[in-house]
Length: 265
Figure 1: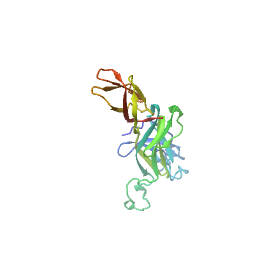
Figure 2: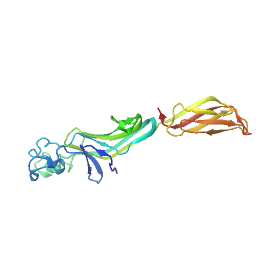
Figure 3: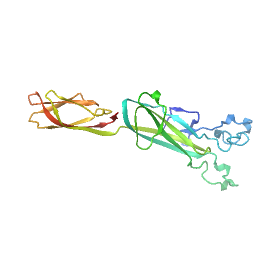
Figure 4: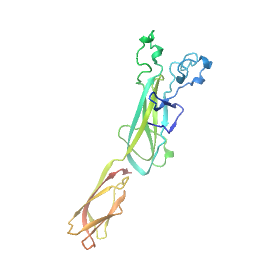
């Protein structure tokens, strides 16, 4: 269950839905205590800001904000600029809270009103997770873009936010779940017919990985008792040295392949 510990702009509120989950909602345009006339005279649903024409003449027929933003508390700071694969998960329901069963929905008799009892499924609102990225700092993030399926974004610092929208100010979105995922693409680098001197050979990867990759070596012409040692393994490269059975450094030709995650730009 989401706790929504981030920040909300003035158009987004925090509420609880019918099953007890915390939900982000688009707030009302006009608050109940901002309507005209006497408090006792205000009509309509309290949470919708008293939406009759006399007490709320501007928004009496619909009183839900058209859009708002929730900014995640979590940010990402990497050690360098990488290509990252981002994903987004949004859980949302919505209701036309002006379309209530007990308002009649055009029927004269209560028993004749159309189902469901309270609210109808919405088709005119939405929520999307957006990301902003920077190569330099979190403070320099000023623009955001929607995370679409399998989005690849380049950056070192990342902020995330959710944009909630309604195309009909009678319809209110209720966002109960927000998640983003960050993954690094699996990739390989390799080299062939590399000659290591008797003192060893340092290999530097074309692009650094996010973490130290696995290393596979295929040596050519090893005699019985010959072996190699790999040292200085890191996300940027490694060093290899070959020895004979007497533990003396020797020159050998080898191939290598490394497999890891992340592409440092």
